[in-house]
Image (tube, rainbow, N blue to C red):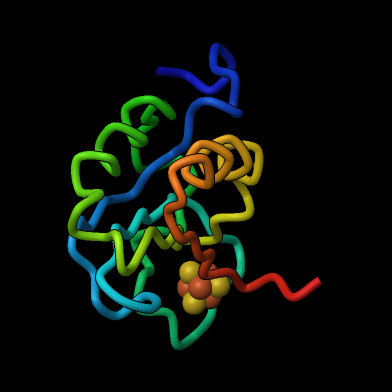
Length: 115
Ligand code: SF4
């Protein structure tokens, strides 16, 4: 799918998904790695997330249903969105987190932005 055809509130460029993460926030977490970061930090251990032209678009519904599939495992943890820089795709994050909050699922963002 090409970006020009997509409503970016409902689609995200995804690098990968980890369904059982224990290192990216409190408890057991579903970890969504979004594609794209322009900072190129020397210490980055996710360099394959840098290229915004890589990865693949996934729909909000697809990701939401994947998360809900693991809801019993993550009920004392939650979901973490990282990357890459997840706030490059903030429109998608707003819609995803609104849906997750309705289900009382804890959310975290792993971001380089501080303001
Ligand atoms: S902000 Fe994060 S993902 Fe981006 S280059 Fe730096 S460490 Fe890597």
